[in-house]
Amino acid sequence: MTDTLQAQVVTREKALASAVMDAMGGKENYMRSGFIQWDFFDVRTLTWDVQGNRVRIDYKDGSLSIITALDKIEGTVYQNNIQVTDPDTLAFYLERGQRIWMNDSYWLVMPFKLLDPGVRLNALGIRNTSDGQPAEVLELTFGNVGATPENKYHIYIDPGTYMVLQWDYFVKHWEEEPALSCLWTDYKWYGNIMLSSGRGAFGVLDNIAVMEAVPSNTFAR
Image (cartoon, rainbow, N blue to C red; front, top):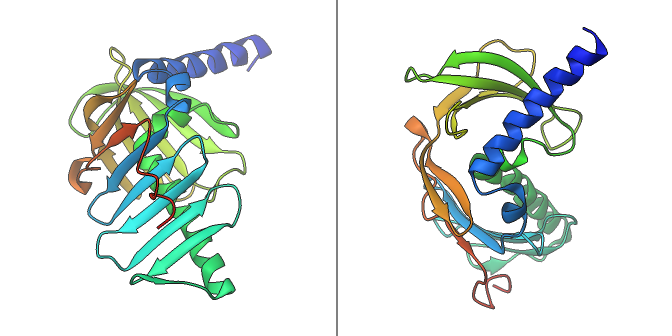
């Protein structure tokens, strides 16, 4: 492939990714969000302080609460409402909290991360979603970034609205068959950004909220 043709391909992929973000309110509005809160299915509630770079994770059954910074091992953990004080156990759960946030936030805000550093995009052309809708498909792989850089995704994009319609997840980037596939549905505006809550057979990311402020004790206990 010539340098000129390669540049055209890259421009097309970046343009498509940018169109997705613009249709959902734009990367700048996403980055300016104060707090984003949602339920990861029926398992846990996350309250993400976007500007403060920290998250609170509360399991629905009350067994675990993690309040952690996202750029360092620092925070507070409660197991069954009892504060964890052992340093090794605390560090284990704080790291676990960071990985939970990486996973759960990707299920919610992946479209805004299509052009993050280290993300590699490859246009695969038009394919049909599982419910028969034609879509532009971007293959997404990672250049040694994130907790699972060997993963691969196929992102199905509506060529008219630029909404993500479906994603296919591959555990290893060389695999041909996805480990899971689900539709993205039920788009709504939350403040200045649009988010999707429906995940097909997997269920719903419930109680989504984008807020300018949260109660002062949210990240205290």
